[in-house]
Image 1 (cartoon, rainbow, N blue to C red):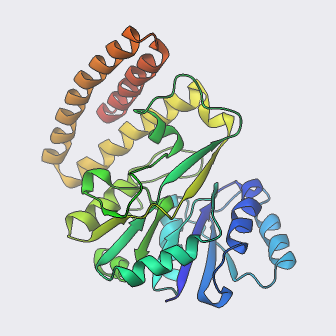
Image 2: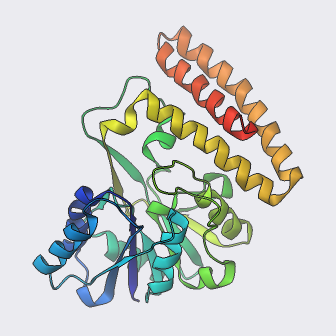
Amino acid sequence: MFLSVVICTYNRGKYLPMVLDSLRAQQFPLDAFEIILVDNNSTDITGDIIRTYQQENPSLPLNYLVEYNQGISYARNRGVTEAKGDIIVFIDDDETVEPDFLRGVDDFFTRYPDAGISAGPVIPVYETREPHWLSHFTRRLVTGEYRKGNRVKLLSPKDYPGTGHACFRRALFLRYGAFDTNLGRKGNSLMGAEDKDFFLRLMNGGERCYYLPAAKIYHHIPDSKLTDAHFRRLTYAIGRSERIRTRQLGQQAFYKRLLMEAVKWGASFVLAAWFLLTLRPAKGYKLLEFRWQVGKGLLGK
């Protein structure tokens, strides 16, 4: 089968050669995949960097295009529209993969004809080191870390992955539609929930999503994403995004989300107390700050 690798980028030109180098090193025939790099109207030198890369690597099947409608959902939808593959493989612009990544994806979808989606582990690679306040409960939201064991298994909706480490049969986009352009990051904003909305549509619709441990993704984390200011912006944006997503579904969905948030507050207090008792107060404080900022965003404060 033919694979389409979709990479969406905004002002991260300096990372792209690293991402593309990992795809150029694939142990997979060059005529069996394409790379669609969607520049979401970057204001840095992304275009120059990619054009230079294309000139230096003419054999790499790289298609560079610009999506002028601002937003990650617009960019992903454009990538899907341009894709020719049977399988759409999403990789973020700050991620790298191992040389056998595409071969493993191709083999998986051949062996599992019932699978509509696959998602592999996301392993954070820190520019310097992991901050002391990060815990199991905040690591995924900051770094995207995703690990579900060492064997192939079916995922439930509550374990939905992120788009940046997932692969889809192309037919799913025809059946369920595109990413919601009211959701997701736009420019420098940290809004999200387009992943959650899309995956829940598919998985609640009966599509089977499998965890594929061999399809490792390495997510490169700069120190700028580990600051207190970024943490506050990110967690507040999570709440705002959930407010938009659930209100679009109706008042009942929104009130259900508020109730869930109240339950999470209770659990967070218990966990924060445990961190304090085990002499790790910074982890507990960050967990409560996370809940506070999400709550503010959810309530529109």
